[in-house]
Image 1: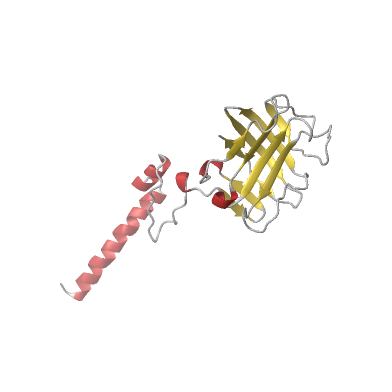
Image 2: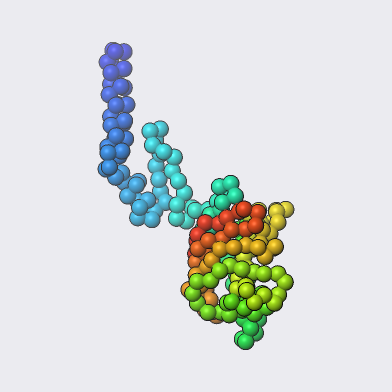
Length: 200
């Protein structure tokens, strides 16, 4: 084959590849996109398409964007600790937390039905996050979050001062498990955690 013809064939081949990319941008769905929308994690990438993103099972449990954090509870590599009976039947204390050594960060809720607040005593519904120190605290719910973004590292617990604010919706918290929707959560240093659901 003569050099001029070879160059023309090569150019046509490249044009054909680019044409495939144009059809995806016009709204047609590729096989890889269809697989991703069905929950699969297989993605493809070419020089004309964006790099694949992690979804589903590949999601990171904690993502930081400055001092705003996103927690994906379902992506924790280890099942979170949950103790629904850390107190007595008359005074339950619910404790939920990640495992810093395996999860890479520490997040916890301590939910006191007495002592740290009188405004929540174990019922379901939406409540303010307020963990006044020291008890007794008649104007507090006793719903106390704790957060250390570097887990086993040298960081500090942002909730240790008891000044976190926000709200949660408690859909379930009993001997069989928990489901808590964090509607808003901010710590006194200005760090925030985007809304998410803890369940287990």
